[in-house]
Amino acid sequence: MHVPKPKKKASEILRETTVEQCIGNYKDGERYCSIGLMANYFGWKGFDKYNMALGMAPYAEKMQQELGLDGQTRLKMMEMNNVFKMSFSEIADYLERIGL
Image 1 (cartoon, rainbow, N blue to C red):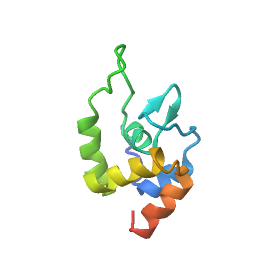
Image 2: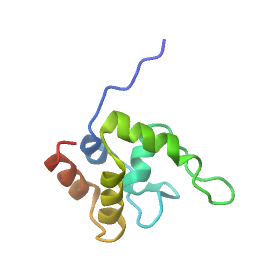
Image 3: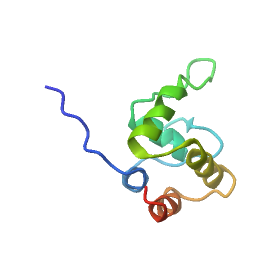
């Protein structure tokens, strides 16, 4: 019998992860950026042998539908992760301030 994952907030996923954070890519080895981590939560496996992100669109849709992460919020998360090099915890603080 399939048991669904309990529904979590995006901020909880960021706070509860045990993976290391990376900068500049969705995934680097076993490390993830904030958006890569969200996609991985829904089953995204990373890159193909040509280093192309495998089908991120369906996971972006799940992020919006199930976590409330619209395109603008995902872009803000990428900026916080890659430009300002904020930690998962700091990004989670922001998401909590906006109710996510």
